[in-house]
Amino acid sequence: IETIVNPGRIMALHAGATGKAILAYQTDAAVEAFLKTPLKRFTENTKVTREAILEELEQVRRDRFAICDNEMDSGVLSYATPIMAADGSVSLALGTCGLKSRFTTPSRDEVRDMLMSSAEEISRRLGNIA
Image 1 (cartoon, one colour):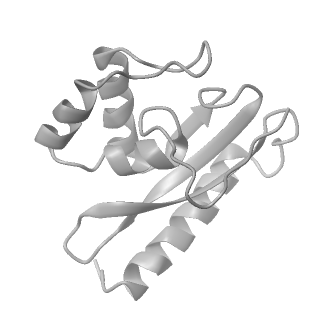
Image 2 (image 1 turned 135 degrees about the vertical axis):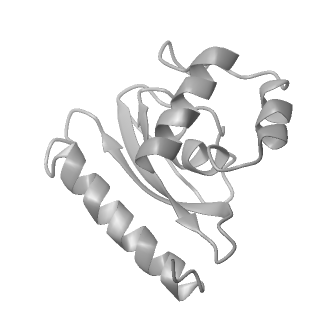
């Protein structure tokens, strides 16, 4: 199993954790426009229906945490959280990924806490003091 996240690699917003963390905080109009585009199924786990994607985006907004479990690349697990700008918008996300078979320590909750703490610090440094 190989996963490569190179600078400049185009990642699908509906399939990767960082993409979901960004897409979840876009306007309803932007999300609807995105959902009208053809959505590629990368693996059998990739969500491509409007309903499934909207449900997941709601979960991401509720938890401020996105998960990609074998959706972009088979055998790969990734997590991400949004980085909020001063105006509350999101155009950045902080994430991590690894082979699912080896990504057992730290726990999902520990990864979430570390990512969220780091993202909050980045947000503060960008001027968001909320």
